[in-house]
Image (tube, rainbow, N blue to C red; front, side):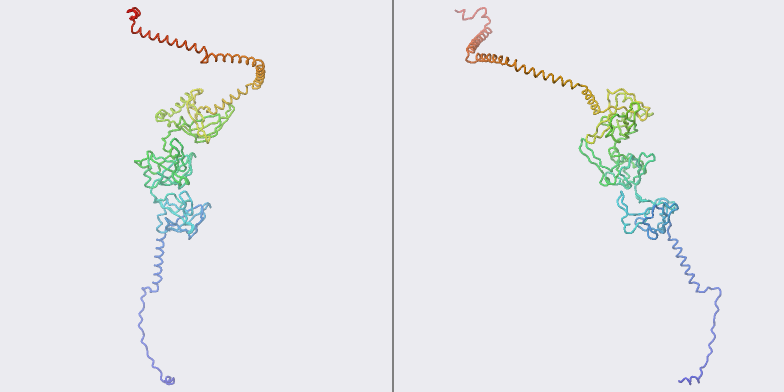
Length: 542
């Protein structure tokens, strides 16, 4: 069909019916508003969940923030990540840094008063090498929880890891020692040469006279620590040379390098009741000192010597006939204005209880003065102190106490502190004094005059010898010749074939025959004593 034809025929127009439109109700919301409402509800839920899942925010102060970075440094407990460093700021006094830490939900229990925080870095200590993993991963903050229920959000960080974890089982004990020796934090504690604990901390006493240590003994070895346990330094080598031979005692190679402490029961057996935690003990210098009976109260005395103290050191023994009664505390020098010379004071600690139970009972009284009075009586009987050589190789000296009955009488002043015990010079000094006296006497001998007299005597002797050679010797030669002739004549007389010898031999034979006849007559008379009256029977018959 062409366009013209279409133009001729006009399309028919149809009327569409009006649609029935229902008016919307005014009290129902539009569905469009449900989408933002739903989004708001989801956002609120997510925010609530984030708030509920968020852990506590803690602030820890350290001396330095070395190795710490916000957003990177982790917080770990037993190598499990429980938080992260959010910010690092300087403190108000600029002496410390404040590290803000965001903890996880599971780490809320670490926000307690006794929790501990420290920075884990590579470190070499007495307990070994720690923190090697941080060489690659970087430093992190370690945390250890305590047992407190009090909440806290601000802490002071430790500069080194704690020696004992909060969940480690065992007991803490306190030790008092005169010196630290080679012990350090982390040094081992030995029991029968078995490592059973470690040193936790140490500090100087307030009076400056000793060291207080805290040690931790692991369970179940803490049950072997009784009230009478003996503790000693196990850091060195105990070398002894006695009648039993050469002895070398040490705990282990680790004790030689990093020090250590050992303990033992008083009688070597398990105690009936373990000591409670934080019990205080005395730490001895060696095992022999630890196992020795308690010394009791010390008596401080001073000895004044007028001789050289070279070789006498603090700690040297004070000996009484082989029994160690004490040790030297100090060696000094002071000027004596009366004698106008110097004297050497030696201060020592004496322990009278080492002389036995009976002596200890004699000095123990209510007033506490019996020991001083007894010492006074012993000094009046001749008790003196004397320096003696303890080792010929090292020339080390010690002080010997003994009785010298010939010593001058001295009254001891017991009211003076410290008490002054008199001294006597040692044998070597006496020998030197005697040698010096002999030398002075030899100096007084007139050796020159003696020499002159001796020369004159020798000259006179030489003149006498010359006179003997010229006068006496010729006369002596004649006398010797006459004596020789006399001896020759006697020799001729005494020869076997000489007439004198023959006559003497015949006389001896006749004498022998006469004696034989006398023996026969004696035998006959013994058998026939009546022959002295009647005569011989043969004669009557005739």
